[in-house]
Image (cartoon, rainbow, N blue to C red):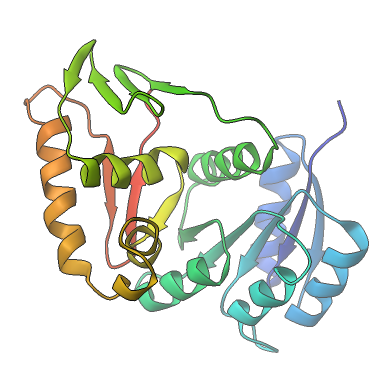
Length: 228
C-alpha cells in the first residue's frame, strides 16, 4: 500500500525534524516547508494527503494559508498552536482547519489526530447507524442508545449530538454547532449551546460509571470521543 503523504509547514527546523522522525516511524512520506508561501506552493505541487501547519509562521498568518488552500482543496489540515491561543484555534477551525494540537503534544496524540483527519477525508458513505463502544445512534430513526437502552432526546438535542457524532473525533466549534442547528443568525448565542450540551451530557453520562462521550475544548467547542 502506498504511504500517505504529509506536508509539514513550520518555520522552526527543530519542530520539522521532530515531526519528520515521528511520522516516518509510522510509515508516512514526509515533505517540509519552512514558510507559508513555500507551503502553499508545496500543497499545489505535491498534493499531500494531510497538512500539519504551524499557525505562528513568520512570513504570513497561518489562517491565511488555510484560506488560500481551501480555495481549491479540501486536504485535511491540522494546526499547531500555543497554550493560550483559544481565539487562534477558533479562527483556524472556522477558516477550514480540521483539528488542532496545542504545543507541547505527544506523538500518540498527534497520530490519533492524524488518523481521525484521514478517516474523515475518505469519500465513504455515512452509515445509517453509528456505533462506538456502548453508544449507538440511528440517524434515520432518531434513536440514541447507551448499552442497549434508549436515551430520550429532544429534537434539538438530537440535532446537536448528530453534528458531533458525524464529526466523531474532531473538534466542532461553537459557531459551527450554532450555525448547523440554529442557523447563521445564531452563531453568537453560545448560552443556548451551554444549556443544551449540559442536558445532553446529563442524559448520556448520567451514571458514575458512564464513560465520557463529549469533551469540552475550552474556549473552542466540543469533541465527540470515539470509544474503544
